Image (cartoon, rainbow over all chains, first blue to last red; front, side, top):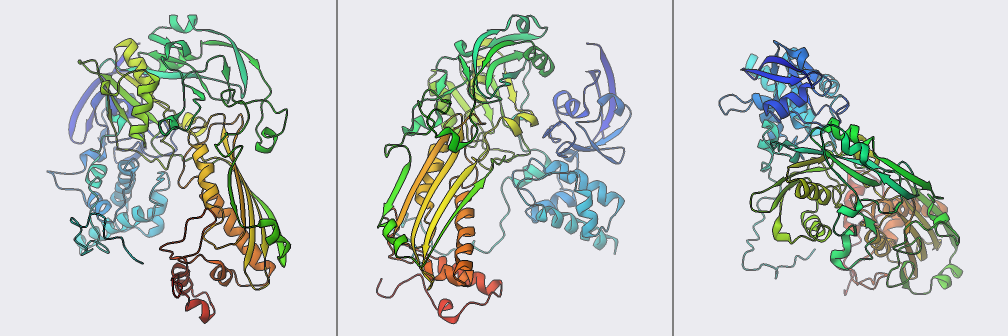
Length: 160
Length: 455
């Protein structure tokens, strides 16, 4: 099969790969580049476990063709901690026990990050809406909602 | 409540200072940073992808299988069928002597449920494996199927599983697990009211976010490392050893990280065939269920039917309870004979009833094999029992919680399966629940205790 080149910035690093045309971004990230933080739960855009941030927008990497991301800036959960210091959302997920099996966690954190990037002080309803594309089968969602609200309170305290 | 302090007396501290304190989970830092390694996060050069050819029929005889076109498909490395599996007929609980072996790794001569694995295709890519699987030709003679447990138990019903010979699991107690306590018919004869009700549930899929699967890597020393999300590591290792006729020392299982299980990952389904593929090709093998397979193929919670007949007095005492439970195992046993047996022990509920009769059947039908899920054998029974309790309370015009206080088991009471009650806390739990919910309960019940005077 003909290979096509793709080049993008992943968590601050330049990446370039030759991929089969039609390869999903999820497949390219996990199997080509080796960033396994986005998870494949359904491969049909319904579970949200594969969520990543492409040019500031939340994207389902299982439904995104890697070749459409040429030149893009991509963020995944594995790139959030800086210098070994957890991102406030990661800290909040730890502190509020918002992880159980952990499989949905990277996608949840991506969805939450896009929310807080656009809406630093969200209401509970905003959080529920922002996470509505991400399925968790363990927690019952409440600890996750609390984690996002906790991280958001940190935002407002920092601003004050 | 008394705590047994004799166990580990030399290492017990008894300060219990952790209780009520939040302590960080040891696995959470890996989860929030994306560093936790799930089985599918393992990638090996040259890894093959395994896809199953599955039965489109609920019950059929296999006249012939033609894999020649599939084998020619570009990228296909190996095609496996029943004859390639060293010990093809197995059952998970044979490890604890619950037989007979009744399930095939790959179908041999017959399929007994829609979705049953028939042929395994190993190819360079997932796509090639999928395309080649579609080229496997299986000639089926469709057989009559049975989907309803009571139909399956009728004389003349199609036999689902010849390894059993009849459509129920044959316990050492006969066609069902039985509990006999007191004189249930005498109890009904003396009761003020009789209430007989039937409760039914459908199969329930666990739907974990991570689908079932494993990645197998052949090692240089003739061993196989299997990265798996099984919830039953040693059941899986030992059954794989039996199925592949391979000593356990050749098998290295790596697991414990499970992306949601809830009982849905206790069956031995993906590992033996993936390890066999790795052995026969010398290549790493990845076998991951698609979401569709997770929903349609992986074992659900069993469908159950529970028929409860109770004799109750106007003063609130239940004097006789007869329960007939049916567990739909689907086409194969897996964990269902155990689930049905658990029901037999549980069906009187946490109540002291002097006359009890219980029969629980594990029934075979041409449905997806069911297996474990959170409290299987118990959960649906509790739904039925507690709805029945509410109906009984309504029947005699009594508050449903007070009705439960009257019948609650207390320390020293003999249970129907002849274990004396110890460490009961039902009354105390109900008192707390009544307070928490501001549910009015008469003072005499709020003063009750699970400890009987003199007990």
